[in-house]
Length: 207
Image (cartoon, rainbow, N blue to C red; front, side, top):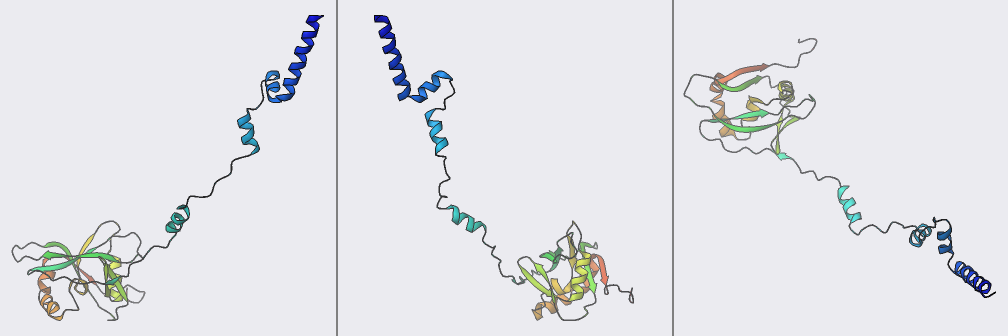
């Protein structure tokens, strides 16, 4: 009788403990009860917090339009005695791309009978109205439509082309320097490795 009473008392205490701790009861019965910390996260899912203070400013800075510097007319530097300017025509695969190049000083020496590695361009000026331009370094030089056309035709796809052309290699805005350079034109053509002659763009009538 005493043992039966103790067993009933023990079973009653177990039932009371099961009612107070239902999670422990489930874990003892099937071993699949979700841990309390995971269950809490499942009931209250985490939400994304507010963006950091600099997130908006970074996005605005990256989406800001680029700043374009104004392009000014090219300014010629004085030529040393015995030097000429040569045009390094920048290559481009697109024939419609803007014409670009660099001017550099080149010594045209009197000694020696050999030619120099540049081409001299002789062309018909055509209309004197300068509606086109050539980008030189960070500036531009206005040129006639006919000269612009021949430079696009002479431009290579992948290699620089070294050319002397009076409208670009001579400072047309400086009368004194221009007249001095004009006196050397015969020598410039004679020393060139090749002289390129351009009349006009071929048409059905003129071809």
